[in-house]
Length: 173
Image (cartoon, rainbow, N blue to C red; front, side, top):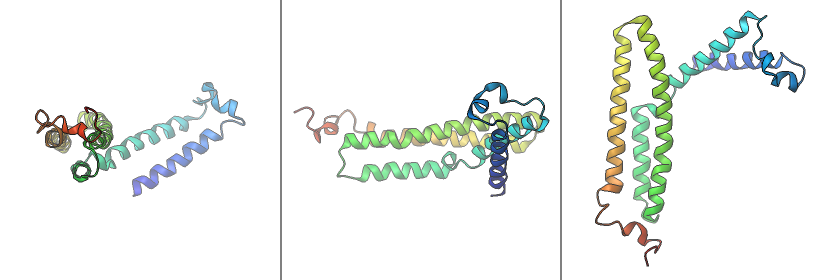
């Protein structure tokens, strides 16, 4: 919570500094006015704001945890339990539910890769190796879980019951 309070304070400070730079929209929109070389603290505020944003994305991304992956699987299983939905609709919902999860975890993995690489270069300690091992383990579990869901809901009876997917809509009649 303290990190979020610090981040929100930095957002207000950064936005206030940016808005105080000009009197009109044309001054604020001019790229030449974005970096004030006379103010030595402007770059520091922007840098600290961006670094803290990356830290918050890394630490507060619930989707990129094992719990988030399991909640995603539970949601997919719940969608496939709904017998009143046609199978084709359930297939579309499967990808609507799982694709954003993949996007969020991809952002987290890239952000964590950059942060952990920098930390490992500076500290060279076993703690960072533990974080990297945890990320790799979570990624392996995520790949396993997604292929399991794909197998469980699609590929298991794909060749024998392919016509059943479209019978609800009478595409082939």
